[in-house]
Length: 315
Ligand SMILES: Nc1ncnc2c1ncn2[C@@H]1O[C@H](COP(=O)(O)OP(=O)(O)OP(=O)(O)O)[C@@H](O)[C@H]1O
Image 1 (cartoon, rainbow, N blue to C red):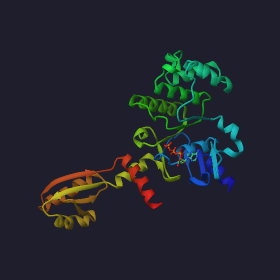
Image 2: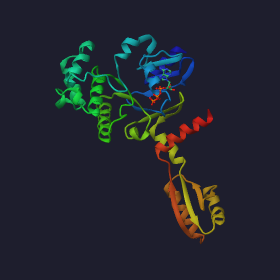
Image 3: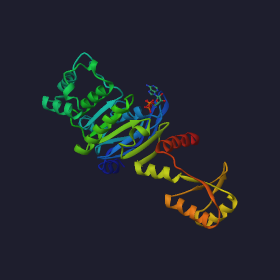
C-alpha cells in the first residue's frame, strides 16, 4: 500500500492520501486527497475557515496529521522531512520581516542561517523586482513590496515547489497583478510548481492551471481550471420571451429537450451559442415571434460559491 502511494506520487509535486486533522478533538481536515501535478499552478480555494491554512501547515510539517499520508516531490514527508523541505519554499500569511532593516539586510539575515550566498540574494532581489529598493528600510515598503520580499525569502533556496497561503490577500489591484506576473514568471522560467490558497476565485483564476476547492475540511472539487469552466457552462440557460410559451415548448422539445416557464420567460439549458441560434431560427420559422432572448451563464466565481453552498446543504 505504502509502495503504491509513493510510486504514483512520483508524478506529483504534492500528494496527500486521506489526510485528516483534529483541533482538540474537532475534525478540521477530513480525508483530503490532494494531487498537485509537477509544474502546475494549483489554486487551493475555499471560504474562510474551510481549512486552507491548516492544510498548508500539515503540508509543511508544522502540524502532525491525525491520519493519512503526505508526499512531497515523490517522497513521504514522514520519512524524508529534512531533505524534502529544503526543496519547498513557503509563505504563510504575512511574512515576518525586520522593519528597521533594509530589504537586502532582511535577506542577508535569512540567507545566513540557510547558507545562501550574496549572488543568490541579488538574483532573488531582481526576480521579485526589489533590486532598486534593496537599500530602503522595510518600514518604508508598501504592503505589495513586503509581500514580494517575503516571496524572495521563500525563493532563496531555489525551491522546486512554492507553497503560499493567501499571497494576494490585502494587496491592491496593482499588487495583485504584480504578484501574479511574478508567479507566472517563476512557473514559466524555472518550472516551479506553485500551490497557493485563496478564498476568492476571481483573484487567482487568471493565474492557476488547476483548482482544488475545500469546504468544511473536505475537498469538493479538484481538476484543471477548464473543468470548472465546463461545469459552469453546463449550468448555462437561455431565457426566451415569445407570445405563446406552451407552443414554443412543443416546437422545441424534440430538438432541444425539456424547458420550463419562469417569470414570463421560457428557460432552456443550452450547450453552446450555436444552439441558441438554432432555437431562435426554429421559433421564427414556426411563425412565433421572439421578443426577448437572454443568455445566462454563471461566472467561475458564482460556480465556486454554488459548489460550496451545495456542499453545505449536503452536510
Ligand atoms: N489553533 C486552533 N485551535 C482551534 N481551532 C482552530 C485553530 N486554528 C484554526 N482552527 C479552526 O480550524 C478551522 C480551519 O481554519 P483554517 O485557518 O485552516 O481555515 P482557512 O480556510 O485558512 O480560513 P481563512 O481563509 O479564514 O484563513 C476553522 O474552523 C478554525 O476556527
